[in-house]
Length: 243
Image 1 (cartoon, rainbow, N blue to C red):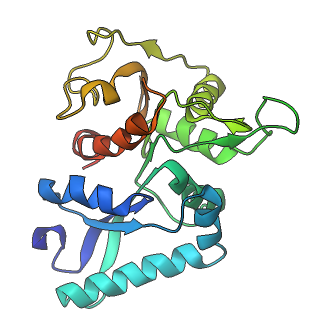
Image 2 (tube, rainbow, N blue to C red):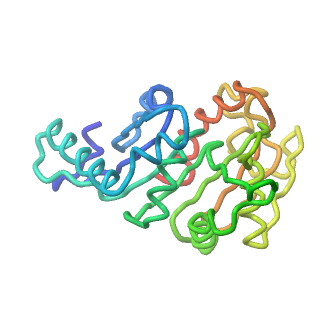
């Protein structure tokens, strides 16, 4: 929308990786005051990681600025706030961005999206691979930019699931999630998954953690329906915690 732009060309930008059309459908009707760039690069996290090799991320941001300037007719359009989100395999791109620290990020939202590798022949995580995320979680817990992480209970084979990774991050912070009952006991009002529009059983909240600007939400379900339903959380997350 036009009001998303300042007279000087500054705008708030959400870059979302994986599921671009689905995100457009859930966000466009909300008429939020931000520019949305949806990026689809494949079906595997490695596809997204390769897409943001050295220089790829900066080139993408510059291309978005140029496109926004062309559409609005405002020379020098530039993102003033940057929000990143991903779903599923899209975390491959997020990993490239955060490990290089190439941009200041005002909010990071990972929707059933953060996986990790195991040590060869083991079920323990490779040392250090999640260090950038641990640092971001620590910073968010102290009130720095928002870090919102969700997971389902979908099992994985040969690598760590989103639930395992969420548990690992919390343990690194010395934090523990609280259980949420089927009646919603233990969760504050307006928590996504508690009466969220069209949520249903596919978004049944089971555990959560809030600390500073760090939010972790665990949801029931181990199938594709529950996985895809995670995309519907984004509008509420943005409205309640970011914008």
